[in-house]
Length: 276
Image 1 (cartoon, rainbow, N blue to C red):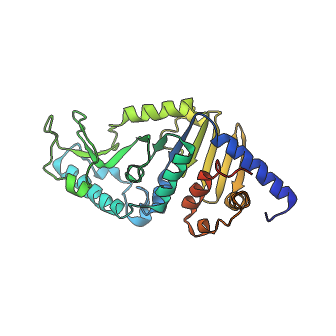
Image 2: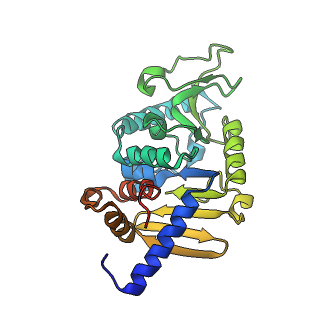
Image 3: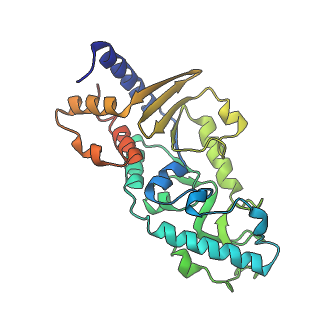
């Protein structure tokens, strides 16, 4: 391994600590929009990409037919964009990491990419743009086909005939409260919370969760931040790569060409396989 003896020793200590955390019996993975952004789906509030206007008062899907059509048009555009992101290597890496860690998954995203990647025990706390919901009687139509096929301006709820909208929490209307409650319970009971590109201003990071003393593993583009109580230490991706290369007795050059989060998740998934 390259580096000074002190640096190598510190990296090995952090790697073993990371391995211990990932070996915890109860853990949960939470992913956010940084991962979807890497997959090619820009954040809802990315003004540079023209994704959403912060003037949400101009869109009133529950007040008029015109407002509903405007919102449907926007979500159909968004769904076509997301469809082009399917097969994302970043989400494939997330699936592999989850399989290695054997942990339930909470997604802050509504793009459906985690579901499409085949991630198990998935909790989409803000909904899924490819599913439909009646915001009158709360009837849910699962995401079984592309939204551009499922959505039509005349499509109504089969139960109450109220116009359907994408199953996404928006404009103060929340249709996924049970999923959120389940995700919060998972976090409450977890010994370790693994965060991947999350937005800590969004659920499930309530005030109580932010004040939690749980151990946290925060996956960043260039490394992993290990947080125990008030102490946080960064284990850089190159250090993880070198330790795994040494443990495996072979080169890990394949990860060098990966996208940042794809690379980190691939390395993280190998932590339990390669001991230091």
